[in-house]
Image (cartoon, helix red, strand yellow):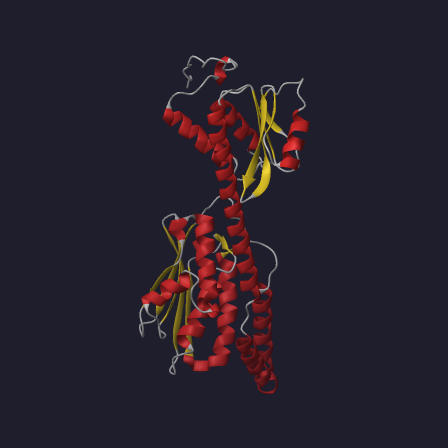
Length: 359
């Protein structure tokens, strides 16, 4: 869409026709949003050059340079060959102060009180706009850093979740396996293989995603061991539709929910109970649910657990909810239906096909 031209203010540098000022506020806001999105991966990210082009248009500048702390400029347009912009960038990186040479200005970008990079602008006298654009870049970089920190925290929680194997469960499982060594060697061997599968899957050190089939296999091995420990107190019903077996989902989504159903629902009832695990297709979504008829809990407590405010033994629920929202969006978190003495039902809904989610 053609950009209308506006007469330059006295003293304003006249750049090429395409770089004349943008007057429409909606267009300016849209361009600013694109610049902010382009910096999601930082000043050296794959879209940094696109961000530089957007900044050039916003400022009607002859040339733009962006760099992180390496000092390597990503440019759009032309920077004056007779001015040593590399030296200007070096000066800003050392002094954290603005540097100006003729019509070229180098501005420090400070994020959370730390220098993150430098913006170089050539051929514009719009100093007020330059300050606003610099503030826009700082805000975009702050958001990028926060998102990166959140991802790192989620990854750290996942590593902790992978290592969170209940010593009580391990002791009971091995004790039951040992009890069958003489009386039923085949049963003992079968349970030992289940235990090995459970440990191998829980401690897997690679891969963000798995398949519904692999997650259900891990659930089956865990429940087989728990049935050996709890005997008739634990009853299990597992049903999964073939069309969702290949659906890719984040690693360790269902297993923590099933473990919570057994540990905090069924084990606390003297008479035990039943755990139902279901996987089925629902339109373009895959619906997974874990339901138990155990002791249940107050809805307020379930909300606190999802917010990460519960006991560390239920850390898995908050972690699963957070990872689902990060991968699929805020509308794809866990849904918990529960009441005291009424059991608990946890629903997981994910798209059957999601770009970038590959096991």
